[in-house]
Image (cartoon, rainbow, N blue to C red; front, top):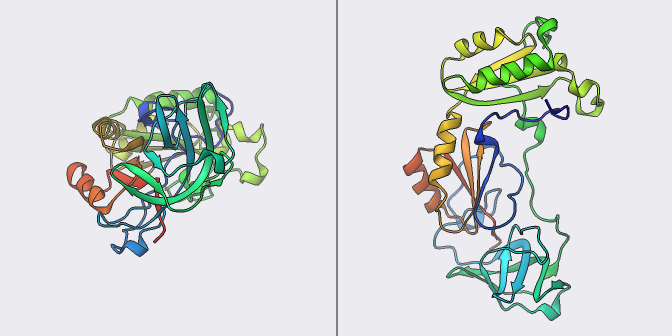
Length: 307
């Protein structure tokens, strides 16, 4: 097993992957589902950036702009790591390379910027001069990693201590992963460190006796717990999940052809598939709820409404 797994998810199947539309890699994994969004345009510039379909105000985008010999300026949230780079996204109207710093190789010009403008007919139109930004700039996850990998079970009497330390080993951990992944209704498997982040070192961060192994399932929790206890003697929490890994992968596959989709990321912790699009609306979210069930797909928009 990779000895750098501290606080990392142990997803045995395909749920740990992202399906990306276009070139490049997706952004960080998605956050847990948020509360319902108030349906007034001024209140929708939140974490998910969803707007009403009738919203015609301005948007902010922190992204790359790339122009190649084959196509004019386009807005991109991911680029292929080639030279020159490649990407695909909405056209940018009103763009002026002479007004911003940029790189250029073999007729392709690109840079990373903050843009403000309107979005209509699949194109972004500048309403203000673009500002140069570092490639790492832009909104990130608002959910701490510690929350994502938290253990949902209440601590047992005496705290999280391995009931059978002799079977709390890396080999036992691998065996538990295989048992969980092969069980009916398997949803996810992850590790929660019992060592405070400030105290983590290479030695104690990889100690199977100082972790809580978490497994989730849509089937009988007690049956999975009993099966895992046959091979794993460390701390263990088995919890119910709203959807199995197979369910999430089926939803992800069905989302491949969504217009303006940038990527899909199944989130086994929340039991949802995160779908990122260029511009997302409340109406689109309702349609996804009707098609897949409420909470199965969590829509977010890369364009941030600012009016």
